[in-house]
Image (cartoon, rainbow, N blue to C red):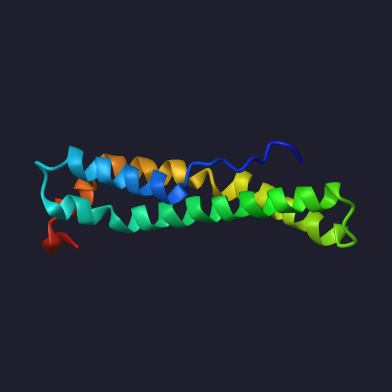
Amino acid sequence: MGGFTAKSTSPATFGSGVYARFVQRSSQATSARAFAVSVPYLHLCGRVLGGALMARSAAIAARQLAEGSADAPFYRAKLQTARFYAEHLLPQSLGLLRIIKSGGASVAEADPELL
């Protein structure tokens, strides 16, 4: 179950930095384009913060297992859940980041009459 590490970089700092850079970069664009990616941004924050919490719980579980905790099945389940999250849910963050970076033009420039 190796490969889980808790990095010191805060996921919240990472996520807010990505959005801030996007808004700065698209300052010439309408605010509608920034608002158009607000929901994917919130989803990204949830995925990344969830990953950070999973990494933290995996680190605790690994430490408890190394110390011979009597709750070994519980801690093995924590490691299994964190691995699933890292392999199946966390990679979705890359797609959300791509949406955020694209700027939401397809939403902001959509003709409401056609919807």
